[in-house]
Amino acid sequence: MRIVVASLKGGVGKTTTAVYLAAVAAERRREVLLVDADPQGSAAIWLEQRPIAGVDVLEAPSERLLNRSLSDDGEVVVIVDTPPASERIAAAALARADVAIVPTRIGGVEVPRVAATLDVVPEQIPAGLVISSARAWTRDFKEMVEAWTDAGLPVWAVVPERVGIAAGPESDLHPDGLEAAGELWRRVSRAAKRG
Image (cartoon, rainbow, N blue to C red; front, side, top):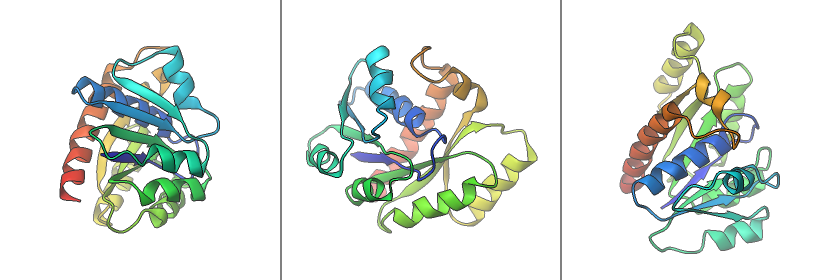
């Protein structure tokens, strides 16, 4: 299964989503390759500082390296962390994806970037949102989720704000983040089987 975590906007939780999802997939005894396609190498740095058993990392910051990393059709779960603002890299990864995950936050500038990212996702690829750093009790959150649901765009996971605060290699994976990633894994697995 090839899972692409993509957003054309930075700071929305792509790397956090990719790392947590990789941890959950490995926990479920899947062999996992986390492909860090971002030249910043945030996912690779994270896993160098805090390795996760069962998760291998490959840095592939170019389209050529990315395509090579996606060529293996074995039993490996491949999770791609794409760079922000690189439609070319995102499109190359999404063209070979089984499932697309679009992380976002709640806010005015986020909606157009979600739409722009979804425009790059091929029609046959199932896609869903992950809302990062969520304040689920707010009116803005509830209204935005309702609008996306009405538009036919599923919200596959909600990552509470406190996970964003604890995210990164400086601390262990947050239990609430792992719980959200577990729900995301179930949704992604179902979408891949249907797709």
